[in-house]
Structures are given as structure tokens and as C-alpha cells.
Image 1 (cartoon, rainbow, N blue to C red):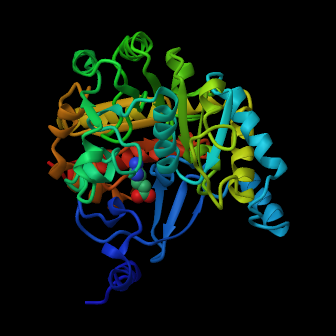
Image 2 (tube, helix red, strand yellow; image 1 turned 180 degrees about the vertical axis):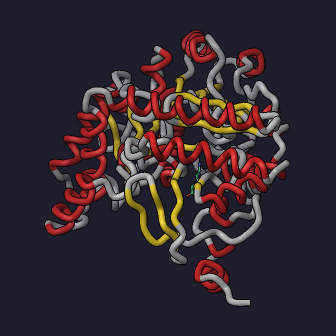
Image 3 (tube, rainbow, N blue to C red; image 1 turned 90 degrees about the vertical axis):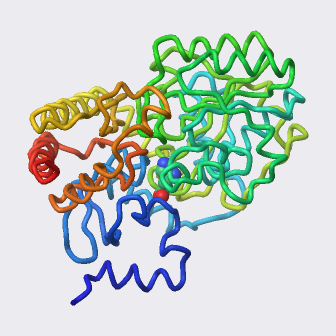
Amino acid sequence: MQLSKSESLFAEAQNYIPGGVNSPVRSFKAVGGTPPFIARGQGAHVWDVDGNEYIDYLGSWGPLVLGHSHPAVVEILKKTAEGGTSFGAPIEQEVVLAKLICSGLPSVDSVRLVSSGTEACMSAIRMARAFTGRDKIIKFAGCYHGHADGLLVKAGSGALTHGIPTSAGVPESYASETLVAEYNDIESVEKFFLANPKSIAAIILEPVAGNMGVVPPADGFLQEIRKITQDNGTLLIFDEVITGFRVGPNGAQGLFGVTPDITTMGKIIGGGLPVGAYGGRKDIMDVVAPLGAMYQAGTLSGNPLAVSAGIITLTELQKPGTFERLDTLSQRLTEGLTDAFHKAEIPSTINRVGSMFTGFFNPGPVAGLSDAEASDTEMYGRYFHAMQEQGVYIAPSQFEAGFVSTAHTEADIDATISKVSAALISLR
Ligand code: HOZ
């Protein structure tokens, strides 16, 4: 049988790259089959190397809020590259991006740019420990904060998808500093404060969970977390790598009106290029070298290309009506999906916050990891393939978010809803 180009490439890739991919969830291990190798993207659409076209809701896992190859992003990248791609020295654009971040997220007085969300979260934890002089941290089951040792404990995203939420290779001594609470369950947090007085440096959480599928915070949950951290001299870290400049112009902290001490960022602030950042209250940020004794550095930190793409992306997002439009389009999509699942009589729950959403094969509600894990993942796999057949590109795992971009049109959304209805027929 003649192999498709993607199948040939995937076979060849496996000879040279572990599992043929540079990030596990891309391998399709959870849903089966061969990942299409993507050749190009334009607006809300991508094409694979075999010429198949898809309406894209992966959005490179979140950064592409403006869609693929946005003309202003492409233009600034060309112009920037002509002037040099890396200097390892301060550049003017870093200041511009830092100012945009600080004005968008008022809890951030100053910000350090790094190259990935993993680096941002790893550094934020180190900074919290340096500032408080304490070692323990609390994270939540199913939240994912990158792949640093100590954060890969009951982690979401690919780690959850592949059944290794607590990774091999993480020393027991590191993992023992990480206390794992249940999302949307304040009692599970209180218990740790009682058992570990004056020892907890920080709580880190995704203010809207996006790595066990989208799980919004329950009413008052973030406020309760804010209070318990304040009462105990513990720092609150919001991981806004996904939600920052996604769920609103001021991130999840603006949407829910809760002010963290530290925020981690990535994805959108790099406009589709590798980036991360951590920022917060000035007195906390002052512990970072060269001002203070907490060390963190990076050759490509503040890289001209990533920073320029980030500036353009954040500037485009400031245009009046942008977040309203993202919200309206996303609502149109999730209402259509809800309707289609209902008509097909398939138990489902669609969680959405702004332009991030997940459809769970689960009657719901889905308010935490145990609910998300109760979803029918075998059914999700079949749905995923039926959607691919229909020309719609979604995450190859139940435990991820889908994203709407400003490049999606009403016609894309309506076409997607029809394709979902067609896909669901094949599942019954
Ligand atoms: N951790 C990412 C999803 N939340 C996956 C990134 C990728 O595979 O590209």
C-alpha cells in the first residue's frame, strides 16, 4: 500500500527523534494513527504535506491568537531578521514588550523574559523560594506548569495523556517538596497549611486550568486561594502561560479580579515564537540577579524575533472590540457544539472561558481532574479521527484546550459545527 507523505515522514522521524516527535502529545499515541506533518498555515487554516486542509483549533497550543502567518507578524519578523536574529545583549524591543506586559497585567511591576513557559514556571518557583526562604510548594492535580523537576508531579497535558503525570527521573527528594491539592477544592489546600506551618513558599496554579482540558475556577475559588496565601505568608503564582492575553486583555487575573504576587507567561506574548516570562511585585522581582541572589539567565532570552512578534501580537489585541469578537465567535462555536452533541445524544460537557474551550465526553460537570479523567477517552479518539476526516484540526488528547483566533470567521465556525454533526454520526 502506498504510504502518504506524512506516514513516510513519521516513519523516518522515528529513526532520529524519540517517538518521531519533539513533544510527546504530538505523536498521537493517545488517539492512534499518524500525525499529519504540517506544511503551512494561513489564518485559521493549516495544510499538511499531503495537501489536506484543516480548520485549525489547535493554534499551536495557544500562541496563535491572531491565526497563522498574520501579515503584521510576518512583516515584523522579516524586518527584524534583516537586522540580526540574536545579540545576547539588551535591545530596545525588550523594553517595549516588558512595558506592554506590565500595563496589561497590573500585578506585574517588572518582568524577566525567558524562552519557554517551562523556564518561566521553574524560575518563578525558584524566585518564590528565594524570597520566602521556604522550600515547599503547592500545585494542583491536572495543572501543568512545564516539565521542570518538581512540577512534573500529578501534571496535566501530555504527561497526563501518556499516563506519566509524575515523570520517571524526578528525584523523590524533589517531588516531596511538591504538595498536590485538588483543583476547586479549598479544603485540600487548607489541610497542607495545617500540616506544614510556615513552610510553604508558593501556590502555583492555572487560574483557568487548560491542561486537563479547560476547567474554569469555581466561584470564589481563586479568592479563597488568595486569602489563604496572604494569611500564611505564601506567595501566589498564577500560571498564565495559556490564559495571559487570551481570556481577556488583563489575563485571568483581570477577568476574575484576583491579584497574584507572581505571574508566569508564554505563548501569546511571543506571537508564535519561543518565549516565556515571569513577573510580579517589585520587591519579589528584586531577588532576581543581577539585583539579588536568585540566579537565572538565558542566551536567547529577549530574542529579537520573539520579542518583535510578541509586541505586534499584543498591539493587535489592543484594537477595540478584539476580545469581544473572540468571545462572540467562541460562544457561537461552543453553542453549536453543545447543540450537535445533544442532537447526537452523546453525553458531553463543553467548558469554555473566552476563546479557550474543551468538549469532554462526559455528562459533567467537569470541575477537576477526577471529573476530566472520567471522560470517555476512547470515544474522544474516535471523534478526533472523525474530525480529521472532516478537515478540522483539534488536539490529539481529551486533556487539552481548543483555541479560537481572530482569524476564524463566522463561516469557519458554522462549517465546523456542520462537520462536527457529520463526525458525530459516525460515532453512534
Ligand atoms: N504542553 C503543550 C500542551 N499544553 C504541548 C506542546 C506541544 O506538544 O507542542
